[in-house]
Amino acid sequence: MRSNAQKKLNGQPVTIRLGGGIYHFHRPQATAKKYFISNTMSWNSGTDNIKNIGILIKDAQKITIDGEGAKIITHGEISSIVVDNSQDIVLKNITIDAADPSVTEMTVESVSGNTVIYNVHPTSNYSVSNNVLTWFGEYGWKFTGGGVAPQVYDPAQDATWRGANPFSNVVSVTDLGNKRLQVIYSPVAEDIKTGRTFQMRDAVRDQVAGFILKSKNITYDNVTMNFMGNFGIVCQYSDTLSFLNCRFAPDETSGRTNAGFADFLQVSGCKGLLRVEDCYFSGAHDDPINVHGTYLKIQEYASPKQVKVKFMHHESWG
Image (cartoon, rainbow, N blue to C red; front, side, top):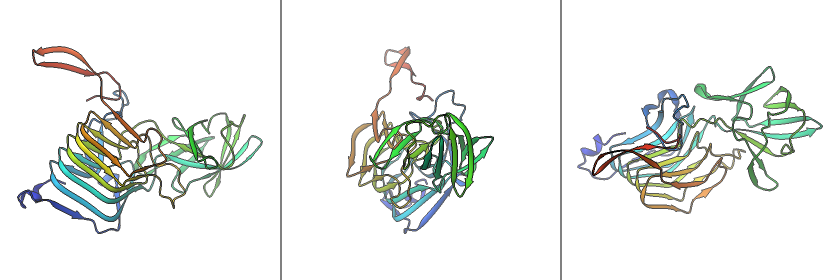
């Protein structure tokens, strides 16, 4: 989405109204563009930094996208919205969710000795082969077993923590059909108790739920993020950002307990006012809000007024 149409209006503010309804974003139809994003991929992760973008707002000014209650459902791993080198952008009255959340969930139905029955959430798809369970989603993403840093949600305590991998110490895994699994352990971990839900994910953050880069006066207003795949909304090298009346949490009618792969809101190397007001955060796999700078080590002095520096952390590069 570029500003060509806006130029015809002599730079006057433009509002794009989605008119409510449901919109499906499929990865193969997304805009493919390379971005280097803080706290996402390591230099040796083997990925290419290509983001598959649902809505790209680039080199634009004074644009409001009003969903008017619209819901966007992603299919496959997608970077939902990217705002690049733009100013005075407002995103409002939009809900974003995933048809195939890349944080999978299963709930303990029963524990009998070393045998546990799990109910898998309807949005989590899997296959079982030779006692190995593989989770998968649309357009190719997959991982095995408990993935990395699985979390446990206990509704009795309304608490979540990083706990036992539910696919460690496994003797056998059997698909009982109808999204039910039987797992026999040797022995059963202490965290595995009836009613608790396990949340599992891969480690690679190769997409983001949103990205704001080198932009100014960007506002999310009444935006609901029911699922934030791979990473949350990353704000990088930007100025004056507002998140107002936003909800970062699972759809209350979905039965899911998780809404995010890692941080919900990541702010790296920004300036100006960061305003987070009347927002709700629940169901993250890391920090709800993370605000930080980046350490850079001087490599050489190019001139009295110029230095060459190097990113020192393996998740910041490019």
